[in-house]
Amino acid sequence: DSVEEADFVLVNTCAVRGKPVEKVRSLLGQLRKEKERRGLLIGMMGCLAQLDEGQQMAKKFGVDVLLGPGALTSLPEALKANERFFDLTFREDVLDYIPPPPKGALSAHVTIIRGCNHHCTYCIVPTTRGPEVSRHPDLILKEIELLKQAGVVEVTLLGQNVNSYGKDQPGFPSFAELLRMVGGMGIPRVRFLTSHPVNFTDDIIEAIAETPAICRYIHLPVQSGSDRVLRRMAREYRRAHYLERIRKIREALPDAVLSTDIIVGFPGETEEDFQILLDFLEEAELDRVGVFAYSPVEGAEANRLPDPVPEEVKEERKARLLEVQARVSLRKNQRFVGKTLEVLVDELPEPGLAVGRTYRDAPGVDGVVYVETDGTVRVGERIPVRILRADTYDLHGVQA
Ligand code: SAH
Ligand code: SF4
Figure (spheres, rainbow, N blue to C red):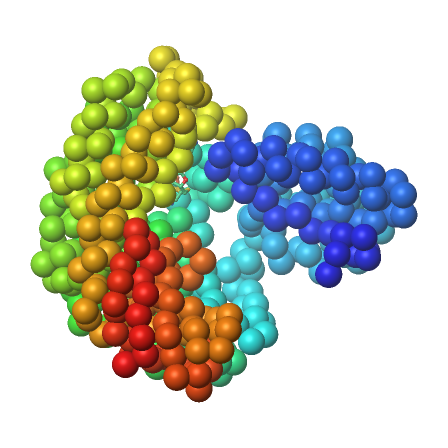
């Protein structure tokens, strides 16, 4: 429960931007002190572990166990070893491993594909996670069946680019086919993360439209609204393609919630590019936007591009973007006022009040619904709620 009492601390890391890397550095510094004081064992895993930067950190701070994202299944062996244990291989059996269902959880993630075959110039993921490898559908279905038996009512299919599922393995279903299979298993809410605009094909849209259990929430990262920037990012589509995809999604799935990721301050992004991006946001009318200041990560190609954008300009653009998007998001959220929506109850903070999510809101990141209830509802129940009021992201309503 706490670092002070633990015998072994395993630090899971992210290398996608500089900030999480610095957090790991300072945490490892603290852990080393604890280690010197009372012989604690330190483990480190995740994407940073796979990179030179992470390995140097591991040596400097006396990490005992270092496992790359492809070596998770080496953990038992690592814990038995009486000496430093570093494994950065991509083990065949990692995708075969079925984790035990999390105790008492309503929502769970299930990996369906590892790695990424795209080469976005800002991104370190293809380096740390390798090429796309799909997981056997039998294992995916088995894991989901176990989760269902354990009471999980919401499953998120996970991968860097889930739309590519099956392409690397002859005989595997396509992503659209997998969606239909999982959607028919009796799990009331099925989600997926992350999609790529190039691979988000019509058959996927059709599969969602025809499968009620698939949530009407699509996270489709665009990264920029300016074609010049998209080209430098090596994103393989242009603004018009993205807009055409979301038009198609809305046609088939009216009222779907769409969210995106955007990087501001990419090398060479001019004020004009940024204005084009703001204009894109007004035109696309997405529900939610995650915005990141471009972070030069060691080993990513964009690091070598000319014309870096000063930090203060990145921050200023980020703030301006959020301001524009807040107006769009509020406008979009208001379309739910007066409607009755199904809400999955996540929490009961006080008698007569429930906090939950519609099947358009993903766990952890997005909006919630505050519901006045009759006091008898339980966590995990799905209840009809009449929406009375909308904030930028959240909704307020009464049990119907
Ligand atoms: N596979 C997903 C997610 C990749 S990482 C995709 O294709 O979009 C999650 C988000 O982090 C990305 O969508 C991107 O917006 C952001 N990101 C990745 N590298 C970054 C960098 N170097 N600087 C800032 N943001 C970055
Ligand atoms: Fe990174 Fe996503 Fe691009 Fe793959 S598609 S390189 S994970 S941003």
